[in-house]
Image 1 (cartoon, rainbow, N blue to C red):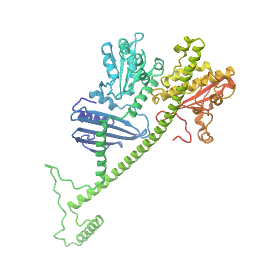
Image 2 (image 1 turned 90 degrees about the vertical axis):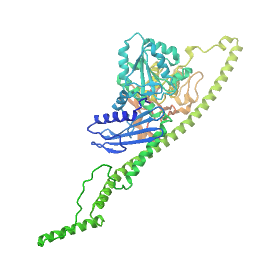
Image 3 (image 1 turned 45 degrees about the horizontal axis):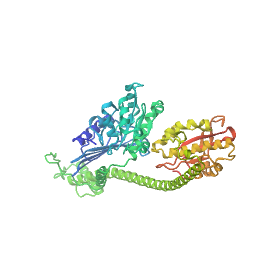
Image 4 (image 1 turned 180 degrees about the vertical axis):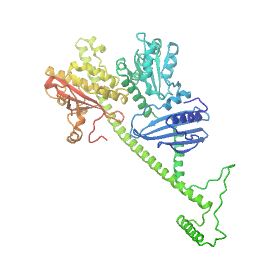
Length: 592
């Protein structure tokens, strides 16, 4: 959003400055049309005037060694409400885009805000008295982008940490707001929003939209980058925050007031393409413009008697007749030549327009196919989750019945005190908030016979998709089941493999539904994509440091992905189970 009444003019100016920085090119952004650049670039400019205000679409298409990139900038200067602009950089191949310098230009030149949050190009340092404004911005229902809040205390230098936060959040500029709270503000922030939405010192918390501090469970949606994670490589932290911001920007619904403007601009863009395919008429001279008179060729009135001259005239007359015959014109005059020029110009424009129409239709077809695929996957995921929910509710009801029955039996035996006491804190299972936290928790299970030997970064990438930690919780249930499987074998309560354990779990041990478990892949999958099932293990398990793992847990669906956990049951060799992979679905006969 913007309060700048000259928004469109300011956007044009910043866009032109950005283009000049790319090379010696200064196309007119005040005129609707397509413009070709010196290095194969193409710029689309669409202006629209309506009762609701003035709108502008600028789209730069560049093709180079890194593929094709499109920078889309839309600005709307409202006649009676808030003006706004949107910036999107995309690649047909889905490559992640860096934040363009254009974003910094716009942030520096315009007063932009997201809901009630003023956007800044660098993190805002907030001290005690100003923390109430931060709390209002975090909970603002009109906010569309992410809001990163970093906390501190007196143990470390505030300015040094704030500078680090600026480096870590470099790739979020223009898409999210970032603040760093001083120690006093960090404490007051917790007092205002409560423990469930607090920001611990030396962490960065990512606040999604629609924050509701009155609901403690809402805190699970707003992920925390722990101190331990921040102590890792700076590039990794910067990548995590950048990816999360881009994913949120892509997945969030478009505000309702944006849609009519985008549709109107798209209609004008389509009309521009169609107009280039239609024959053009002879342009009328502009008022006040001078037209240089051209002498029309006339037939000679007197011919020299010299034979050579007669022969030359005859030759040129024949050439002229040939030209008229080939071009299909009766006379060579201004009107005929202007018509020929218009035909040539139209042919050139038509060729370019046909290429643009073909490209646009192909892009729209690909988008339709992508949306249809997403719809099918979402529908399948919804049906699967409904089934899982029904099973979970049935299990909860059964467990509640068992608890009541056991409590009555315990009370009847004379131990009423223990029968109705609250569950001790140490007996409560702790679950990860997301896949990044799951990585840290996996390390605690190596002493229980379950060792994670895979790539931690691949696991952490799932946190971008599983924003509330639902699938991470399923993964943790599978880890706990593996731990109890090892315990059952050590205790002699179970003597077979994991499938038998899940189907006939000994009393008192954890398990997951056998439906989540698959002992093997299909023969075709292993034949064609078996190399994607080789995962890291210690060298005493396999001297190569890798081994094939077919057994896996299906962790469920989240958005467009279906995470899997692959493991190797090595209990009979060294008493351990190795988890070699937790990540997106590996390739098989059903993936694309």
